[in-house]
Length: 498
Ligand code: HEM
Image 1 (spheres, protein in one colour):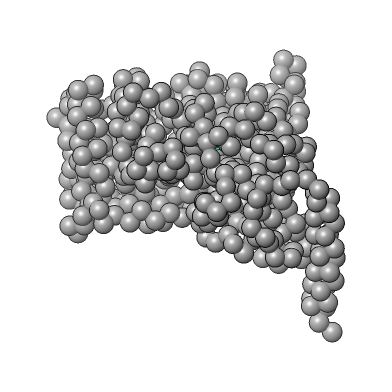
Image 2 (cartoon, protein in one colour):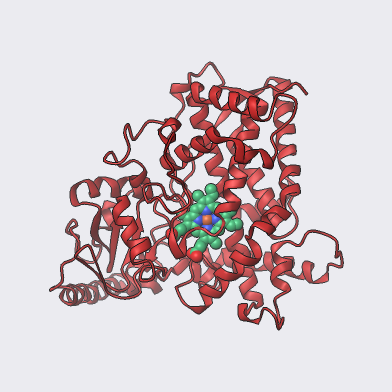
Protein backbone atom coordinates (compact mmCIF):
# COMPACT_ATOMS: atom_id res chain seq x y z
CA UNK A 1 0.00 0.00 0.00
CA UNK A 2 1.25 3.51 -0.80
CA UNK A 3 1.30 4.98 2.70
CA UNK A 4 2.85 8.29 1.61
CA UNK A 5 -0.06 8.97 -0.75
CA UNK A 6 -2.61 8.07 1.93
CA UNK A 7 -0.94 10.25 4.56
CA UNK A 8 -0.75 13.18 2.15
CA UNK A 9 -4.42 12.78 1.20
CA UNK A 10 -5.50 12.73 4.86
CA UNK A 11 -3.25 15.70 5.62
CA UNK A 12 -4.70 17.61 2.65
CA UNK A 13 -8.26 17.02 3.83
CA UNK A 14 -7.39 18.04 7.37
CA UNK A 15 -5.66 21.18 6.14
CA UNK A 16 -8.54 22.11 3.89
CA UNK A 17 -10.82 22.24 6.93
CA UNK A 18 -8.19 24.21 8.81
CA UNK A 19 -8.16 26.81 6.05
CA UNK A 20 -11.94 27.07 6.15
CA UNK A 21 -11.84 27.53 9.91
CA UNK A 22 -9.16 30.17 9.62
CA UNK A 23 -11.12 32.05 6.96
CA UNK A 24 -14.22 32.06 9.16
CA UNK A 25 -12.26 33.36 12.14
CA UNK A 26 -11.22 36.53 10.32
CA UNK A 27 -14.23 36.53 8.00
CA UNK A 28 -16.02 39.58 9.41
CA UNK A 29 -12.97 41.75 9.67
CA UNK A 30 -11.46 43.81 6.89
CA UNK A 31 -8.12 42.27 5.95
CA UNK A 32 -5.81 44.27 3.67
CA UNK A 33 -6.34 43.59 -0.06
CA UNK A 34 -4.41 40.81 -1.71
CA UNK A 35 -4.54 38.11 -4.36
CA UNK A 36 -6.70 35.03 -3.86
CA UNK A 37 -4.70 31.99 -2.95
CA UNK A 38 -4.97 28.29 -3.74
CA UNK A 39 -6.44 25.95 -1.15
CA UNK A 40 -3.76 24.93 1.36
CA UNK A 41 -0.79 26.43 -0.52
CA UNK A 42 -2.26 29.92 -0.54
CA UNK A 43 -0.02 32.29 -2.52
CA UNK A 44 3.17 30.30 -2.08
CA UNK A 45 3.44 29.55 -5.79
CA UNK A 46 3.55 33.29 -6.59
CA UNK A 47 6.93 33.53 -4.93
CA UNK A 48 9.91 32.68 -7.09
CA UNK A 49 13.66 32.90 -6.58
CA UNK A 50 13.59 36.68 -5.85
CA UNK A 51 10.70 37.08 -3.39
CA UNK A 52 11.29 40.83 -2.85
CA UNK A 53 10.92 41.49 -6.58
CA UNK A 54 7.87 39.22 -6.91
CA UNK A 55 6.21 40.91 -3.94
CA UNK A 56 6.93 44.37 -5.35
CA UNK A 57 5.08 43.42 -8.55
CA UNK A 58 2.07 42.12 -6.59
CA UNK A 59 2.07 45.28 -4.42
CA UNK A 60 1.77 47.45 -7.55
CA UNK A 61 -1.68 45.91 -7.94
CA UNK A 62 -2.85 45.60 -4.31
CA UNK A 63 -1.16 48.50 -2.53
CA UNK A 64 1.40 49.17 0.20
CA UNK A 65 -0.30 46.99 2.84
CA UNK A 66 -1.41 43.70 1.34
CA UNK A 67 -2.53 40.39 2.66
CA UNK A 68 -1.33 37.06 1.32
CA UNK A 69 -1.37 33.55 2.64
CA UNK A 70 1.69 31.32 2.62
CA UNK A 71 0.33 27.86 3.34
CA UNK A 72 -1.93 28.40 6.35
CA UNK A 73 -0.14 31.50 7.59
CA UNK A 74 -1.43 35.01 7.02
CA UNK A 75 1.35 37.21 5.66
CA UNK A 76 1.22 40.99 5.53
CA UNK A 77 3.55 42.64 3.05
CA UNK A 78 4.43 46.29 3.59
CA UNK A 79 5.79 48.21 0.60
CA UNK A 80 5.79 51.95 1.33
CA UNK A 81 7.61 54.25 3.73
CA UNK A 82 4.36 55.47 5.36
CA UNK A 83 3.11 51.95 5.91
CA UNK A 84 6.51 50.82 7.27
CA UNK A 85 6.34 53.63 9.82
CA UNK A 86 2.96 52.35 11.02
CA UNK A 87 4.32 48.85 11.60
CA UNK A 88 7.82 49.69 12.91
CA UNK A 89 7.10 52.87 14.88
CA UNK A 90 3.40 53.50 15.62
CA UNK A 91 2.68 49.83 16.43
CA UNK A 92 6.27 48.70 17.01
CA UNK A 93 5.49 46.85 20.24
CA UNK A 94 2.76 44.76 18.58
CA UNK A 95 5.01 43.71 15.70
CA UNK A 96 8.27 43.21 17.62
CA UNK A 97 8.13 39.43 17.66
CA UNK A 98 9.48 36.83 15.27
CA UNK A 99 7.46 33.93 13.86
CA UNK A 100 8.30 30.33 14.79
CA UNK A 101 11.07 29.14 12.51
CA UNK A 102 11.61 25.44 11.98
CA UNK A 103 15.30 25.63 11.00
CA UNK A 104 16.33 27.80 13.92
CA UNK A 105 15.01 25.18 16.35
CA UNK A 106 18.03 23.14 15.35
CA UNK A 107 20.80 25.62 14.64
CA UNK A 108 19.98 28.31 17.15
CA UNK A 109 19.22 26.19 20.18
CA UNK A 110 15.45 26.51 19.94
CA UNK A 111 15.41 30.15 18.88
CA UNK A 112 17.65 31.18 21.78
CA UNK A 113 19.58 33.53 19.52
CA UNK A 114 18.69 37.18 19.26
CA UNK A 115 17.65 37.38 15.62
CA UNK A 116 14.96 34.64 15.70
CA UNK A 117 13.96 34.84 19.33
CA UNK A 118 10.27 35.73 19.92
CA UNK A 119 9.52 38.95 21.82
CA UNK A 120 9.68 38.47 25.60
CA UNK A 121 11.95 38.77 28.61
CA UNK A 122 14.60 36.39 27.17
CA UNK A 123 14.90 38.44 23.97
CA UNK A 124 14.94 41.72 25.96
CA UNK A 125 17.79 40.50 28.18
CA UNK A 126 19.81 39.21 25.25
CA UNK A 127 19.21 42.38 23.27
CA UNK A 128 20.38 44.47 26.26
CA UNK A 129 23.46 42.29 26.68
CA UNK A 130 24.38 42.52 22.99
CA UNK A 131 23.77 46.28 22.78
CA UNK A 132 25.53 47.24 26.01
CA UNK A 133 28.29 44.65 26.26
CA UNK A 134 29.13 43.42 22.74
CA UNK A 135 28.16 46.14 20.27
CA UNK A 136 28.63 49.34 22.31
CA UNK A 137 30.71 52.18 20.84
CA UNK A 138 33.38 51.42 23.41
CA UNK A 139 33.58 47.74 22.43
CA UNK A 140 33.57 48.58 18.71
CA UNK A 141 36.48 50.98 19.28
CA UNK A 142 38.43 48.29 21.15
CA UNK A 143 38.61 46.28 17.89
CA UNK A 144 39.87 49.25 15.83
CA UNK A 145 43.44 47.98 15.71
CA UNK A 146 42.32 44.51 14.64
CA UNK A 147 40.23 46.01 11.79
CA UNK A 148 43.25 48.03 10.67
CA UNK A 149 45.47 44.93 10.65
CA UNK A 150 42.99 42.97 8.56
CA UNK A 151 42.42 45.86 6.14
CA UNK A 152 46.18 46.35 5.72
CA UNK A 153 46.45 42.66 4.78
CA UNK A 154 43.64 43.05 2.24
CA UNK A 155 45.30 46.13 0.70
CA UNK A 156 48.65 44.32 0.58
CA UNK A 157 47.13 41.34 -1.28
CA UNK A 158 45.45 43.65 -3.80
CA UNK A 159 48.65 45.68 -4.23
CA UNK A 160 50.48 42.48 -5.14
CA UNK A 161 47.84 41.75 -7.76
CA UNK A 162 48.25 45.32 -9.07
CA UNK A 163 52.02 44.81 -9.42
CA UNK A 164 51.46 41.50 -11.19
CA UNK A 165 48.83 43.12 -13.47
CA UNK A 166 46.16 40.53 -12.65
CA UNK A 167 42.47 40.91 -11.86
CA UNK A 168 41.22 40.58 -8.30
CA UNK A 169 38.09 38.69 -7.29
CA UNK A 170 36.79 41.53 -5.14
CA UNK A 171 33.72 39.60 -3.99
CA UNK A 172 35.87 36.78 -2.57
CA UNK A 173 38.38 39.22 -1.09
CA UNK A 174 35.82 41.27 0.82
CA UNK A 175 33.99 38.12 1.94
CA UNK A 176 37.24 36.69 3.36
CA UNK A 177 37.93 40.02 5.01
CA UNK A 178 34.40 40.03 6.54
CA UNK A 179 34.86 36.47 7.83
CA UNK A 180 38.28 37.21 9.37
CA UNK A 181 37.11 40.39 11.09
CA UNK A 182 33.95 38.69 12.41
CA UNK A 183 35.86 35.64 13.68
CA UNK A 184 38.52 37.69 15.46
CA UNK A 185 35.90 39.86 17.14
CA UNK A 186 33.54 37.06 18.16
CA UNK A 187 35.76 34.04 18.85
CA UNK A 188 39.18 35.71 19.11
CA UNK A 189 40.89 33.97 16.20
CA UNK A 190 40.69 33.51 12.48
CA UNK A 191 41.35 30.52 10.31
CA UNK A 192 44.02 30.39 7.61
CA UNK A 193 42.55 30.81 4.17
CA UNK A 194 43.43 27.27 3.07
CA UNK A 195 42.72 25.62 6.38
CA UNK A 196 40.29 22.71 6.08
CA UNK A 197 38.71 23.81 9.36
CA UNK A 198 37.93 27.22 7.84
CA UNK A 199 36.41 25.70 4.72
CA UNK A 200 34.21 23.43 6.83
CA UNK A 201 33.24 26.23 9.20
CA UNK A 202 32.36 28.62 6.35
CA UNK A 203 30.48 25.93 4.45
CA UNK A 204 28.50 25.06 7.59
CA UNK A 205 27.54 28.67 8.35
CA UNK A 206 26.63 29.42 4.73
CA UNK A 207 24.60 26.24 4.32
CA UNK A 208 22.85 27.05 7.60
CA UNK A 209 22.01 30.53 6.34
CA UNK A 210 20.83 29.16 3.01
CA UNK A 211 18.47 26.69 4.69
CA UNK A 212 17.31 29.30 7.18
CA UNK A 213 16.36 31.56 4.23
CA UNK A 214 14.62 28.79 2.27
CA UNK A 215 10.81 28.82 2.07
CA UNK A 216 10.28 25.85 4.35
CA UNK A 217 6.78 24.38 3.93
CA UNK A 218 6.88 23.29 7.57
CA UNK A 219 6.90 26.96 8.63
CA UNK A 220 3.72 27.63 6.70
CA UNK A 221 1.87 24.33 7.07
CA UNK A 222 3.01 23.18 10.52
CA UNK A 223 0.78 20.08 10.35
CA UNK A 224 3.12 18.50 7.77
CA UNK A 225 6.26 19.36 9.73
CA UNK A 226 6.97 15.71 10.55
CA UNK A 227 7.05 14.74 6.85
CA UNK A 228 10.04 17.02 6.12
CA UNK A 229 9.00 17.04 2.45
CA UNK A 230 11.94 19.24 1.34
CA UNK A 231 14.52 17.38 3.44
CA UNK A 232 15.47 20.67 5.12
CA UNK A 233 15.12 19.41 8.70
CA UNK A 234 17.41 16.47 7.96
CA UNK A 235 20.05 18.82 6.54
CA UNK A 236 19.64 21.21 9.45
CA UNK A 237 20.13 18.46 12.01
CA UNK A 238 23.39 17.43 10.33
CA UNK A 239 24.65 21.00 10.28
CA UNK A 240 23.59 21.60 13.88
CA UNK A 241 25.75 18.67 15.01
CA UNK A 242 28.85 19.99 13.17
CA UNK A 243 28.15 23.43 14.45
CA UNK A 244 27.73 22.35 18.07
CA UNK A 245 31.03 20.40 18.01
CA UNK A 246 32.78 23.51 16.67
CA UNK A 247 31.27 25.80 19.30
CA UNK A 248 31.98 23.44 22.19
CA UNK A 249 35.64 23.45 21.17
CA UNK A 250 35.74 27.25 20.98
CA UNK A 251 34.19 27.66 24.42
CA UNK A 252 36.55 25.08 25.97
CA UNK A 253 39.56 26.88 24.46
CA UNK A 254 38.36 30.14 26.01
CA UNK A 255 37.76 28.57 29.41
CA UNK A 256 41.31 27.13 29.37
CA UNK A 257 43.01 30.30 28.05
CA UNK A 258 45.24 32.06 30.59
CA UNK A 259 46.16 35.14 28.51
CA UNK A 260 44.72 38.04 30.52
CA UNK A 261 46.18 40.78 28.31
CA UNK A 262 44.44 40.17 25.00
CA UNK A 263 41.40 42.23 23.91
CA UNK A 264 38.34 40.39 25.23
CA UNK A 265 36.36 38.83 22.38
CA UNK A 266 32.60 38.23 22.57
CA UNK A 267 32.98 34.69 23.97
CA UNK A 268 35.20 36.00 26.82
CA UNK A 269 32.66 38.69 27.63
CA UNK A 270 29.75 36.25 27.72
CA UNK A 271 31.66 33.63 29.73
CA UNK A 272 32.30 36.38 32.28
CA UNK A 273 28.52 36.63 32.85
CA UNK A 274 28.02 32.99 33.84
CA UNK A 275 27.34 32.91 37.57
CA UNK A 276 28.13 36.64 37.96
CA UNK A 277 26.08 38.42 40.66
CA UNK A 278 26.35 41.80 38.93
CA UNK A 279 25.02 40.65 35.58
CA UNK A 280 22.74 37.79 36.65
CA UNK A 281 19.86 39.51 34.80
CA UNK A 282 21.36 38.26 31.52
CA UNK A 283 21.05 34.65 32.71
CA UNK A 284 23.75 33.44 30.35
CA UNK A 285 24.22 29.70 29.96
CA UNK A 286 26.36 27.65 27.65
CA UNK A 287 23.61 27.24 25.05
CA UNK A 288 22.97 30.99 25.18
CA UNK A 289 26.61 31.67 24.34
CA UNK A 290 26.50 29.22 21.46
CA UNK A 291 23.31 30.74 20.04
CA UNK A 292 24.65 34.29 20.31
CA UNK A 293 28.00 33.38 18.71
CA UNK A 294 26.06 32.03 15.77
CA UNK A 295 24.01 35.23 15.59
CA UNK A 296 27.00 37.50 15.67
CA UNK A 297 28.94 35.52 13.07
CA UNK A 298 26.01 35.02 10.72
CA UNK A 299 24.85 38.64 11.09
CA UNK A 300 28.22 40.23 10.50
CA UNK A 301 30.17 37.93 8.15
CA UNK A 302 28.27 38.36 4.92
CA UNK A 303 26.11 41.46 5.46
CA UNK A 304 28.99 43.92 5.48
CA UNK A 305 30.84 42.06 2.70
CA UNK A 306 27.78 42.06 0.42
CA UNK A 307 27.25 45.78 1.05
CA UNK A 308 30.90 46.57 0.20
CA UNK A 309 30.69 44.41 -2.92
CA UNK A 310 27.51 46.15 -4.18
CA UNK A 311 28.99 49.59 -3.49
CA UNK A 312 32.25 48.87 -5.33
CA UNK A 313 30.29 47.44 -8.26
CA UNK A 314 28.16 50.63 -8.46
CA UNK A 315 31.29 52.80 -8.26
CA UNK A 316 32.99 50.87 -11.05
CA UNK A 317 29.80 51.15 -13.13
CA UNK A 318 29.73 54.92 -12.50
CA UNK A 319 33.25 56.31 -13.16
CA UNK A 320 32.03 59.89 -12.53
CA UNK A 321 30.99 59.00 -8.98
CA UNK A 322 34.20 57.01 -8.41
CA UNK A 323 36.33 60.01 -9.49
CA UNK A 324 34.35 62.40 -7.32
CA UNK A 325 34.80 60.15 -4.28
CA UNK A 326 38.53 59.85 -5.02
CA UNK A 327 38.79 63.64 -5.16
CA UNK A 328 37.12 63.91 -1.75
CA UNK A 329 39.59 61.37 -0.35
CA UNK A 330 42.53 63.25 -1.90
CA UNK A 331 41.45 66.45 -0.21
CA UNK A 332 40.56 64.96 3.22
CA UNK A 333 43.22 62.22 3.52
CA UNK A 334 45.86 63.22 0.97
CA UNK A 335 47.88 60.96 -1.32
CA UNK A 336 50.62 60.16 1.17
CA UNK A 337 48.71 57.92 3.54
CA UNK A 338 45.88 55.42 3.79
CA UNK A 339 42.43 56.14 5.23
CA UNK A 340 41.94 55.88 9.00
CA UNK A 341 38.71 55.39 10.91
CA UNK A 342 39.03 58.91 12.30
CA UNK A 343 38.73 60.30 8.72
CA UNK A 344 35.28 58.80 8.17
CA UNK A 345 33.19 61.57 9.73
CA UNK A 346 34.76 64.10 7.35
CA UNK A 347 33.88 62.16 4.21
CA UNK A 348 30.48 63.60 3.26
CA UNK A 349 30.32 62.33 -0.28
CA UNK A 350 31.27 58.82 0.89
CA UNK A 351 28.25 59.01 3.19
CA UNK A 352 25.98 59.83 0.25
CA UNK A 353 27.49 57.01 -1.82
CA UNK A 354 26.78 54.55 1.00
CA UNK A 355 23.19 55.77 1.41
CA UNK A 356 22.60 55.36 -2.32
CA UNK A 357 24.08 51.87 -2.23
CA UNK A 358 21.89 50.88 0.76
CA UNK A 359 18.83 52.31 -1.03
CA UNK A 360 19.29 50.20 -4.16
CA UNK A 361 20.89 47.15 -2.55
CA UNK A 362 19.62 46.55 0.98
CA UNK A 363 21.24 43.21 1.79
CA UNK A 364 18.20 42.11 3.82
CA UNK A 365 15.54 43.17 1.27
CA UNK A 366 12.59 41.95 3.37
CA UNK A 367 14.28 42.67 6.74
CA UNK A 368 13.83 39.62 8.99
CA UNK A 369 10.19 38.52 9.30
CA UNK A 370 8.29 40.19 12.14
CA UNK A 371 5.24 38.60 13.81
CA UNK A 372 2.08 40.17 15.24
CA UNK A 373 1.85 39.52 18.99
CA UNK A 374 -1.88 40.31 19.05
CA UNK A 375 -4.70 41.38 16.73
CA UNK A 376 -4.21 44.97 15.63
CA UNK A 377 -5.88 47.49 13.34
CA UNK A 378 -3.50 49.33 11.03
CA UNK A 379 -4.80 51.97 8.63
CA UNK A 380 -8.29 50.51 9.05
CA UNK A 381 -7.14 46.98 8.20
CA UNK A 382 -7.34 44.01 10.52
CA UNK A 383 -3.94 42.41 11.11
CA UNK A 384 -4.47 39.04 12.81
CA UNK A 385 -2.36 37.79 15.73
CA UNK A 386 0.55 35.61 14.55
CA UNK A 387 0.53 37.11 11.04
CA UNK A 388 4.01 37.35 9.55
CA UNK A 389 5.01 40.84 8.56
CA UNK A 390 7.42 41.30 5.66
CA UNK A 391 8.71 44.84 5.18
CA UNK A 392 9.86 45.13 1.57
CA UNK A 393 12.66 47.69 2.01
CA UNK A 394 13.91 46.85 -1.46
CA UNK A 395 10.60 48.06 -2.93
CA UNK A 396 10.51 51.07 -0.59
CA UNK A 397 13.99 52.13 -1.77
CA UNK A 398 12.79 52.00 -5.39
CA UNK A 399 9.37 53.59 -4.85
CA UNK A 400 8.87 56.04 -7.74
CA UNK A 401 6.45 58.14 -5.70
CA UNK A 402 9.27 58.94 -3.28
CA UNK A 403 12.48 58.79 -5.33
CA UNK A 404 13.09 60.59 -8.63
CA UNK A 405 14.76 58.31 -11.21
CA UNK A 406 14.43 55.60 -8.60
CA UNK A 407 16.53 52.98 -10.43
CA UNK A 408 19.44 55.33 -11.06
CA UNK A 409 22.58 55.30 -8.85
CA UNK A 410 22.86 59.01 -8.06
CA UNK A 411 24.38 59.86 -4.62
CA UNK A 412 23.78 63.62 -5.18
CA UNK A 413 20.07 63.03 -4.48
CA UNK A 414 21.02 63.27 -0.78
CA UNK A 415 22.60 66.75 -1.04
CA UNK A 416 20.77 69.13 1.31
CA UNK A 417 18.57 66.41 2.86
CA UNK A 418 18.98 64.89 6.29
CA UNK A 419 17.70 61.48 5.15
CA UNK A 420 19.77 58.91 6.94
CA UNK A 421 19.94 55.08 7.17
CA UNK A 422 19.61 54.91 10.96
CA UNK A 423 15.92 54.09 11.18
CA UNK A 424 14.32 57.54 11.50
CA UNK A 425 13.54 58.04 7.79
CA UNK A 426 11.29 55.23 6.66
CA UNK A 427 12.03 55.67 2.97
CA UNK A 428 15.55 54.32 3.72
CA UNK A 429 15.67 51.59 6.36
CA UNK A 430 18.31 48.99 5.34
CA UNK A 431 18.89 48.23 9.06
CA UNK A 432 15.18 48.16 9.95
CA UNK A 433 13.88 50.43 12.68
CA UNK A 434 12.47 50.27 16.19
CA UNK A 435 12.84 47.50 18.74
CA UNK A 436 14.01 44.90 16.23
CA UNK A 437 16.27 47.25 14.27
CA UNK A 438 19.84 46.04 13.71
CA UNK A 439 21.92 46.33 16.90
CA UNK A 440 25.14 46.01 14.83
CA UNK A 441 24.42 49.10 12.71
CA UNK A 442 27.18 51.29 14.14
CA UNK A 443 29.76 48.55 13.71
CA UNK A 444 28.53 47.80 10.19
CA UNK A 445 28.65 51.46 9.15
CA UNK A 446 32.21 51.76 10.45
CA UNK A 447 33.38 48.68 8.58
CA UNK A 448 31.67 49.28 5.24
CA UNK A 449 32.63 52.96 5.02
CA UNK A 450 36.22 52.20 5.99
CA UNK A 451 36.72 49.40 3.48
CA UNK A 452 35.03 51.21 0.58
CA UNK A 453 37.03 54.39 1.28
CA UNK A 454 40.31 52.48 1.54
CA UNK A 455 39.88 50.48 -1.66
CA UNK A 456 38.81 53.55 -3.62
CA UNK A 457 41.60 55.71 -2.17
CA UNK A 458 44.43 53.20 -2.66
CA UNK A 459 43.45 51.90 -6.12
CA UNK A 460 42.03 52.83 -9.49
CA UNK A 461 39.76 50.06 -10.78
CA UNK A 462 39.17 48.80 -14.32
CA UNK A 463 37.09 45.91 -15.56
CA UNK A 464 38.99 42.99 -17.13
CA UNK A 465 38.86 42.00 -20.82
CA UNK A 466 37.95 45.55 -21.94
CA UNK A 467 34.51 45.16 -20.44
CA UNK A 468 32.61 48.46 -20.37
CA UNK A 469 31.27 49.70 -17.00
CA UNK A 470 27.74 49.58 -18.41
CA UNK A 471 28.19 45.86 -19.19
CA UNK A 472 28.72 44.89 -15.55
CA UNK A 473 26.02 42.38 -14.55
CA UNK A 474 24.12 43.56 -11.46
CA UNK A 475 21.84 40.52 -11.03
CA UNK A 476 20.95 39.69 -7.43
CA UNK A 477 20.94 36.42 -5.57
CA UNK A 478 18.51 35.84 -2.69
CA UNK A 479 19.13 34.42 0.76
CA UNK A 480 19.15 35.70 4.34
CA UNK A 481 21.68 38.08 2.80
CA UNK A 482 21.18 39.21 -0.77
CA UNK A 483 24.56 39.38 -2.56
CA UNK A 484 25.52 39.89 -6.19
CA UNK A 485 24.86 36.78 -8.27
CA UNK A 486 28.21 37.06 -10.10
CA UNK A 487 31.56 37.71 -8.48
CA UNK A 488 32.99 41.17 -9.10
CA UNK A 489 36.34 40.91 -10.90
CA UNK A 490 38.42 44.06 -11.40
CA UNK A 491 42.00 45.16 -12.24
CA UNK A 492 43.60 47.36 -9.57
CA UNK A 493 46.24 50.11 -10.09
CA UNK A 494 47.99 51.56 -7.02
CA UNK A 495 47.27 55.32 -6.63
CA UNK A 496 49.05 56.55 -3.54
CA UNK A 497 52.51 58.16 -3.33
CA UNK A 498 53.80 55.63 -0.81
C1 HEM B 1 25.75 46.18 6.37
C2 HEM B 1 25.60 45.40 7.42
C3 HEM B 1 24.29 45.05 8.08
C4 HEM B 1 23.00 45.23 7.65
C5 HEM B 1 22.53 45.88 6.34
C6 HEM B 1 22.12 44.70 8.67
C7 HEM B 1 20.75 44.70 8.59
C8 HEM B 1 19.92 44.12 9.53
C9 HEM B 1 18.49 44.02 9.39
C10 HEM B 1 17.69 44.55 8.21
C11 HEM B 1 18.01 43.38 10.49
C12 HEM B 1 16.55 43.00 10.76
C13 HEM B 1 15.79 44.20 11.26
C14 HEM B 1 14.32 43.89 11.45
O1 HEM B 1 13.92 42.74 11.41
O2 HEM B 1 13.55 44.83 11.62
C15 HEM B 1 19.14 43.07 11.34
C16 HEM B 1 19.03 42.41 12.54
C17 HEM B 1 20.12 42.07 13.31
N1 HEM B 1 21.45 42.39 13.05
FE1 HEM B 1 22.16 43.41 11.46
N2 HEM B 1 22.88 44.21 9.70
C18 HEM B 1 24.21 44.40 9.39
C19 HEM B 1 25.29 44.09 10.19
C20 HEM B 1 25.21 43.54 11.45
C21 HEM B 1 26.34 43.31 12.32
C22 HEM B 1 27.78 43.70 12.00
C23 HEM B 1 25.85 42.71 13.45
C24 HEM B 1 26.56 42.24 14.69
C25 HEM B 1 27.79 41.93 14.81
C26 HEM B 1 24.41 42.57 13.29
C27 HEM B 1 23.58 41.98 14.20
C28 HEM B 1 22.21 41.86 14.06
C29 HEM B 1 21.35 41.15 15.01
C30 HEM B 1 21.80 40.42 16.25
C31 HEM B 1 20.03 41.29 14.54
C32 HEM B 1 18.76 40.75 15.17
C33 HEM B 1 18.15 41.80 16.08
C34 HEM B 1 16.86 41.36 16.74
O3 HEM B 1 16.12 40.55 16.19
O4 HEM B 1 16.57 41.87 17.85
N3 HEM B 1 24.07 43.10 12.07
N4 HEM B 1 20.28 43.54 10.73
